[in-house]
Length: 251
Image (cartoon, rainbow, N blue to C red; front, top):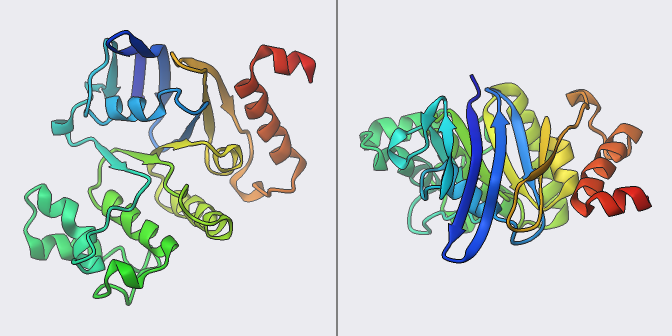
């Protein structure tokens, strides 16, 4: 059974068709990326998977059940870290658990147990303003992961970081995924990020979006080097899919 299955999903807002007959499946423990032109409905897709919205047609299933906020099966990390400046880093990372009704002491203990793994040990009592951009994103991911949901949605989590920090965070996330084997769906505009991190890249068409190609990167985790010929070839496949049939033929 797929951890996530999207079947024939369409979504319209009045006369505006955003998604049309979109199919997508993600296996348990898979790292999937979704990439497409700006305005192609990637955020709308995440709202449907997280249960914040409902499709006009089709269905979204998480572990075989309809997606919904109350299902407790999806954790959603937006692009901005959304850390509260008046709460310590530990209190920020425990916030989601507390919102679910977990007692504060237990929530802090569960979040605190992950600080070393996330490179945040020693910063439990710090405040967000005292952290670097990369550390803030790691704290936001910890807050998401500690909820222990079957599916993690990452909406361009490193898009606001500078190039060097973004690369460091991408490599860190790749290592963390290998250790924990979360089921991850990543929305990104960055082809290189998609190929570096994902097992499978789902390429969307312009709006109304559908999946035009599902590309398996086919790269062993230990060989994902930006300079390797296989890496460049995978990037080219994603780029050609984004450009469409005309660009592929012309190339």
